[in-house]
Image 1 (cartoon, chains in turn purple, yellow):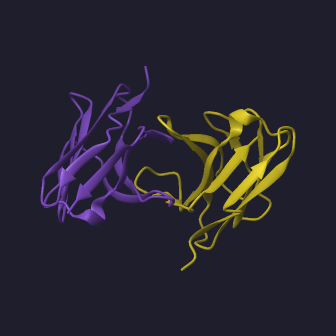
Image 2 (cartoon, each protein chain N blue to C red):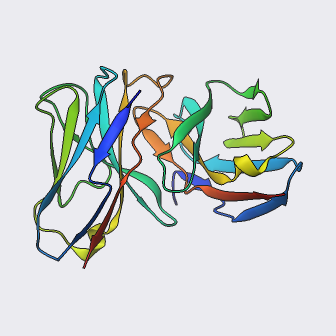
Length: 108
Length: 114
């Protein structure tokens, strides 16, 4: 069993839709939870990080962590074609462990 | 701002050949990392460095060597390339190893081993 599981998709939604991306994990020692966005043929870039259970909002993006269920989510409101990318969850305890990434396409 | 620069961007090798991938960062970061990204596998850590002159093994170190002779550079070497090493290689750097310090990635080196 992988320490971090992420549905690879692909996920295709119309512009303006609410997108939900999810990861589950097995290691309860993870302390920081992150979402990276990776455009085609580019390196990942940090989108958001959270430390504790609960929600963190940044513009159209909301990161949610539920440590009791070992589950994290990223919500994208009013999705735009420019949001089309691969989204990677990552968790930290001494080192980063990444999920497999979810490919998202937002079509006009 | 250059950030993290990787060279080369693309390379095709024959089995058994050797090569070195170069990573350079201009952010004065202490920590540097090499990952490989394969379909369905996410990013896996190969080796990392916590400062000039130091290196350590990551999750998948076999077949690779690294050196950090200068703080701004981190080299990844393949001594005898194998088809299983066909992948996209990413270098990253961070100010420290603390969980709230983001890793900054380069745009990758696409390596094919025939």
